[in-house]
Amino acid sequence: VKKLKINNKYQAITIKEINEIFEKNKSLFLVTDKTNNFLKIKKDFKFDKKRILVEVFGKDNFNKAIKNKIINPILNYNTGDYNYIIRNNIKIVSASMSDILQDQDKFKKLIKKGVFIFAYSSNETKMINKNINKLFTQVYTDFWDLKLKKCIKKDKKFCTTY
Image: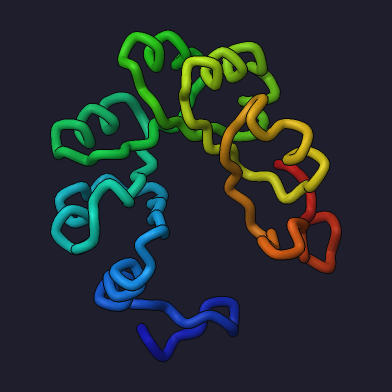
């Protein structure tokens, strides 16, 4: 695995290396995507479990994450989940940008109630700046440069919201 290149550029890292990185950098958070193997997360990652945010799809899987003592599960929002989120005092959700734009009033209310909202995906500076802390509090992005605070993909069709 270590010899393989991702996009002919990036090298995969091992669980051991992830743990070393997170032990040296106490301000980092790990966000997982589409995993339901909660026991593996708890077993493999040796750093503070409060720094692991586990994106979970579906209410049943969210409940399993809670039962498996995942400290920061992120419920992926589906249309109709608003009342479930409020009723269960869920503090972290993820949602597609299209769902957020479709249900703006609900997302504004969630933010007022202190819910952290991870929006995916936007690589569009104007969209992010206009709506950060209004419709969402965090953004998943694919081609963002943190220092330049903009999309760095040369083909501008990738610097959009989808």
